[in-house]
Length: 214
Image (cartoon, rainbow, N blue to C red; front, side):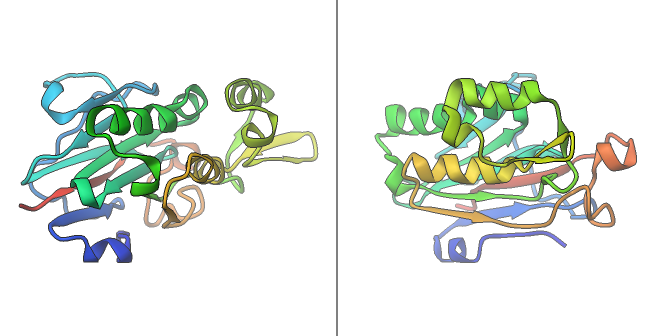
């Protein structure tokens, strides 16, 4: 199966999907060489082999996408401006500020403010399965502050776990994004549907994509 945002079905011309390990791929989807950072490209500025973790399109008949397993695929849509973005949010990129970087680009280049944007977070490993070290929490707190930077972290015994989607949803809401939705299960719990390197030791990835049909 795959996951799509029901409210976005009313956005004319928008195509969007969080894929799984068996989803048939659509027509050509533009992707980047992902490096677990916070660099985001407009599709017009990206070339074959470009490095980055986010692509934005405002062009008709174009799709942008990201490959994920443990990391969070994030889709942003500004329906009024006909802008769509696909972001690859691992813990490093999220701690470094992928979300504020994306929102800043949309405002600077298209004058689109957070209140005009909808966001959706697709399947990713959750706090039930994602054990991290204390340095991960320290990186989030150092940038986002103690209150926001601690969201998603949970100590169980002497171990620390991270639900990255919880942090990203809280950060999007803190920046004033109009609507934030979370779709799909934990990849670690549902390896029948989704790839998870931590659970399987395999390097498979599922593609998520978004863009405009016309």
